[in-house]
Length: 400
Image (tube, rainbow, N blue to C red; front, side, top):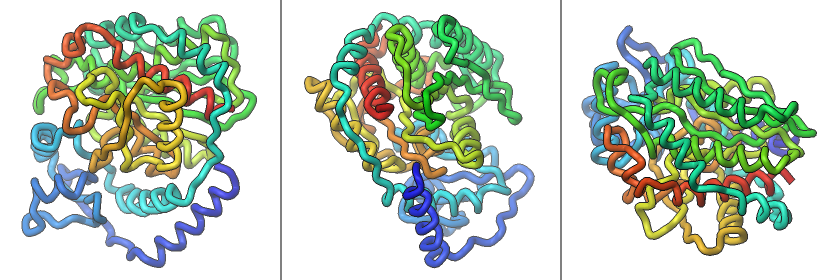
């Protein structure tokens, strides 16, 4: 985001301030939390007569709920709306600020245009030919072997530690690569980050969430293999890393790969990281979110989520599919809410996209249960392989 983007942000900020009255100070009871969720889900769970929104627009509502109500929200979001999680959790002191920043970011996204070009055909084709299904499947099997990867469980910590060590091993021969833990004060599970240093400090971020969840109570003890949600995304990212490192790719910009903690409980890990990037003035050229890549439930191979994402970058992704993966079919669908970590980056003003494995109505019905295993994808990672190829093409073309 260059100077023109900053001007757009400032202009959008003035427009928003002139059109939107500032909400009143929000106070909560000690056991209350503030969440943002799709307006349709809020109206299903909490009619206006029973629970007024603190503030909302035509898509999103911010409401106060009790800790006890979170389980009900998640269950209805999953069972009736086919949504993973269904809400974003906010601390009381940041809720109003986040609302304004969200409006600012979304307005800026509509004004932001980058000069997307596709001109690295030889390099991209060489790299995507090296993407291997068996390596993706192997990582899915390893991550889904943990009883769960819940953000407060011992196995949630252990699974991220395994990934940290695996990424360290993959990059052992590269002095320009660092792998580190992003510690979070509020819970024990770390986010895991790999950076491949480029000639520029501008960044390209590719991430997915490393946690898993099942059931609505006693989640630290639940069986949540999370093979599709989201061992598949992390395995896809790991394959992208493997291909680029084995091919000795030297990026122009700094590449950042992330396994986020605590996505399933309100996008907490990515929200903290994206906010930190904005506050430190990082220039992020693009964000790609890979959350569920291996359940082939639709007649389309790849579905681009059009809401809470950047339109120009989505068009770029579609062009990449047409250019490098012409055998695949694709189209657009909506989540209807902030359905994964891409929304954290969008809310902070960064261009983000999330290619998904199926239309939302055709998504994997076994997520958030003990049945989310690799067997639901015929014990292979052929579908995820498509997303790894797209991820490689995205990085190389955007980087150049």
